Image 1 (cartoon, helix red, strand yellow):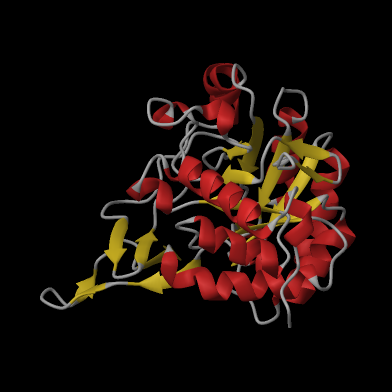
Image 2 (tube, one colour; image 1 turned 45 degrees about the horizontal axis):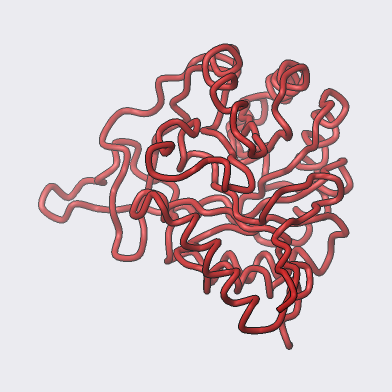
Length: 304
């Protein structure tokens, strides 16, 4: 039998396999180290970073739903300098790619973080454009194509690393957002981020989350995510990392068939901390069954 090659090359960003973990669901890696060999994961996208330390939103800030969860954590993190000094050295000992997810309230904050992190050993930056642009009335950067282009272009000019732009699904046309990110200089696109959702306590007649609404993730969002990945891969010429409700290998394969070059596992990590390894084994088994020798052979092979 021909040996299966799980390696993927996202236009120069090479990983030993296409299974990565989504920002905000895997901490800084050490939280999962006793459950899974971090050397076996293709890439780790660390907890979202901001320029300064951030305490996050008031509690309660997580609510379970029948098919996932809604979170309003609010990007609680120790800040980029703390990450570089205390978390990055730990992660760097493992044979996995390190993706730093960056978040800002202004373009200047994004650019400053890109400049700082470009001088470190991280392998890539993931630009989270679901953040509110305080200079435009708090409207998220990622919902307007012109703003997506502007922030991506500005970060690209200050970034010496591989640049991934993470798209928000809370838009009218995901295709034009993807095109804007590519035109702005993105090396890769990741999608989707969470959908906006709300949970209500019928006894108190108040929102369950202190902030009212939050980001819906988990199996409920998968059909939306698969559709958006399919649409974006049809209009851009850069690699795409697909995510959104991936719970097992079959979910992952759907994303590959829709056109994703790699996948990212998020909410499932909370349910089964070893899920990435289960998914990797499942993908390998699928490839053996179908006679594939490398992942690229079935990327975008949706018969439609």
